Image (cartoon, rainbow, N blue to C red; front, side, top):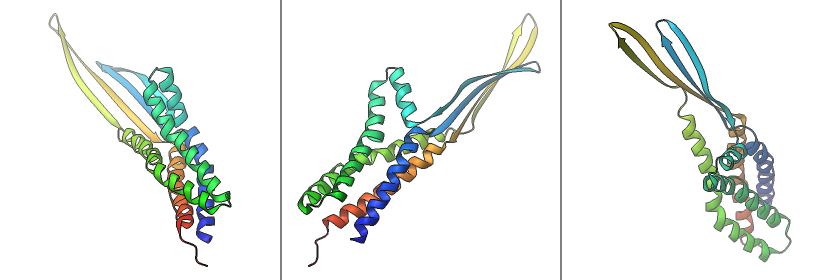
Length: 190
C-alpha cells in the first residue's frame, strides 16, 4: 500500500513539473552572421529566440507545419495529460477491478507516453549545434585590385529552464506511474 502512495506522490510532483516544462523555454538559439572586408567588419543577428514546447507548437502552426505541430502537441501534451488523469482516477477509485482495468490500459499506452522522452531527445539533438561556427575567406579581384573578405556564422544554443522541468517530469512520471500501477497489479494478501 505504501508503494501505491509513493507512486501517487511522485506522479503529483511530476504533474507540477509538467506545466513549467511545456511553458518555459526548453532552449535558446542564437545565430549570427559576420563579415569582414579589409579590416572593417559588420555583423547581423539572424535568429535569436527561446523555444518552449507550446511556443514551438504555436510557431509550427503559424508556419502551416500542421503534422509536426500535431505530433509534438499530442506526444508532449495530450498523451501525458491523458495518462496522468487516468493514473489519478486509478489512485482514487475504490473498485479494485476497475483499477486493474485502467492500470492495464495505462500500461498499454505507456509506450506512447514515452514519446515525451523522444521530444527531449530532439531538443538535445538541436543542442548539439552549440557553438557551431563556419568561416570562409574569399578574395575578389577586379581591374588588378584585390580585396580580401571573410564571412562567418556562429550558432549558439543553451538549455533553458523548461528543459530541466520537462526532464524531471518525464523521469518522475515514469517512476511514479510504474510504482502506483505495479502496486495495483500485485495480488493482495489476505
